[in-house]
Image (cartoon, rainbow, N blue to C red; front, top):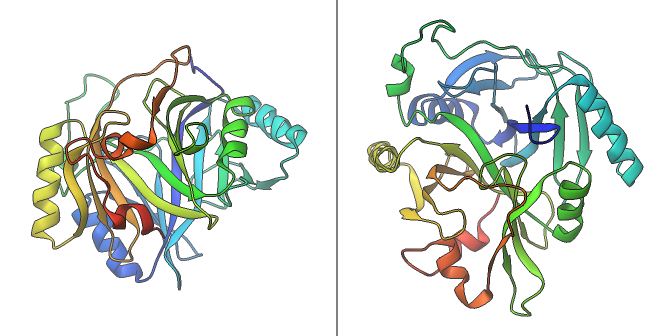
Length: 309
């Protein structure tokens, strides 16, 4: 039984400057499994332990960045209900027919005040994780290729009007605030971390003047040791690393931030605590924002704050 009508993050579509370089990065360095290509030139991937057909799409474009981020909902009835609630709130929605994305059902798309396109969907083909649904082994050979995350976990998006974004996620979609960072006035949010589950976050937003920007897409690993292994693989493949391995104060996760060949930042992430919607949100004050983001260094680097795609 889902905690809300929204189950979890489902897929993200990224723009890359060179499709072949992007395929090499996500397939061979990150270690995702290619699951298809469509007539629009999009290439589809999933992690080895995800069961649905896709969680990442990439397409070649003149500018890097994010096209849309999607959440899977619990049923077609939930999709209809949430579509109605969005429209009642005053947010226009668009219906994208089943099959427009490979192995994916009808999607409801809407634009946030931050300038980001978000999708909801209920149906996607279960292609499995390579293990039997009866008496399975614990992992497959795909778990050893590249960094090999277990799932696409969350994203951090940059844009304006995050108060309105917060209201939509909490009061329309049923998320709850887990942590937030306040600005110098002690009241205005600089960043918000939101969950629809027991995870420390399923999506996050940081206040930024330019709309529709991507800070990072995160891929979950199952241990700190795997994060350190990811650092080795990044160095072996000359991946441009932003910062890490290190620990967050916010969410308590361990992390590395790096860039794909097009300049899209990605994260390999492990840990973080389990959260519940009845918990009081954790607040980080402006004087401790450095420790909140990078607990070991207790300081932010300028690139982490300013470089987005």
